Length: 215
Image (cartoon, rainbow, N blue to C red; front, side):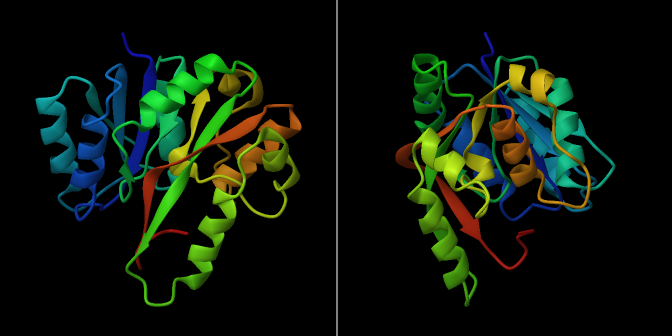
């Protein structure tokens, strides 16, 4: 039974997509569906996604021609049915136990609606000290109280690490497609509605920084 829908939007990600998908296929938790949302790619990543879908029935390719990560994510949400939703980016790597540990925590802590993890930062950008500092700052924020207190400083958790309960979408809305940071806006809106956030202390995702990265 599918318990987790994983949303992985991609656009022209042929250099990194295979590695990202492979890290999901190797998860110790088996009850997932990976929704690969093709956001109008023009390189070989579309074919790569189709090949993975042909090999593993848990992988589904969805097409969203309107360019923009929020559009892609909302399209992915509409194709899933699982009670839990996880995020993943096409240029990152999930540790094998990521989904298992997040699921166990959310099942044991029904008061938490959104759960992230600490991240391991890797960069190929020459001047990346600012991003490295940001990741270190995020990694210090673990409790629901700290996430709430730090919410106006910047996004207190890394978007590709999160897992959240599907019911939050119906209760508080999905991603805003306007010209704004789609993840931070969502966190602020949900926190304002009383949703509690937390973060696992383990580094369960390698956050790749490179010169083509959107943020």
